[in-house]
Image 1 (cartoon, rainbow, N blue to C red):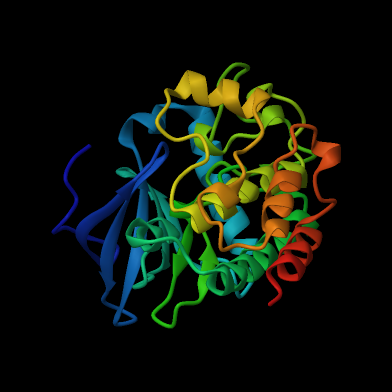
Image 2: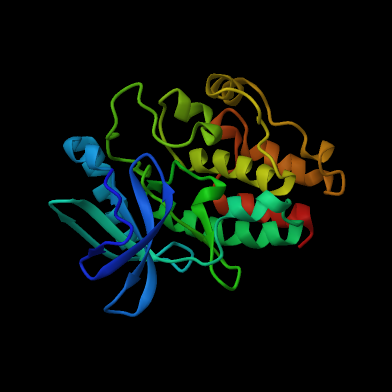
Length: 273
């Protein structure tokens, strides 16, 4: 992809590249008109010839526009031109949950506060029948006050709309795939609950429950193996925290929490916060 850092696009000065995913590259940028720092996501040029990829990028922008929620990253602008497709979003100075847990696991109280906001965002998405499908620490961002926000609906799917991907093509991050995601089964709120259970484990333990294995081994583990007892890594945690994580990551969707608010409530009770 051509290097865009240092260029000006539609009145936005693109600065350094801050991230890259399957759909596009994200830059920190300066909005000349509004005098503010923003994040700009541009689709990979090679995907401009892929009709399904274009529809996914458009769908992400549409969901971000309509899902106006205080715990979801705001979409400021969107356009398509001869160079590609662009989304302008709010900039977050606090980095991601991945950044914050690199130094040390979060406390139980801090994790509960993050979970509260993420579950609020997911509940709003599920209400309009949108499944995020790519919950992971990288997609939970923080503002300068430490408040958490959910971002990146690039892999999201409307429950009643057929998938935009071909059979055998999985969208998202394998480390957080639920069994039904791997088996290309129905995507429901239970899919996000499974991934959120893994995020909870990782946030409190400081590492993924199935770390140090290949992608194929990861997929097999997600299909077959329960998560390790988090109490072995964090014996200071109440035993009920492990029970919450285990239920959230049950292999059968019907055995998980009925909705994200039930998961959050169970976690608060187990944490005593």
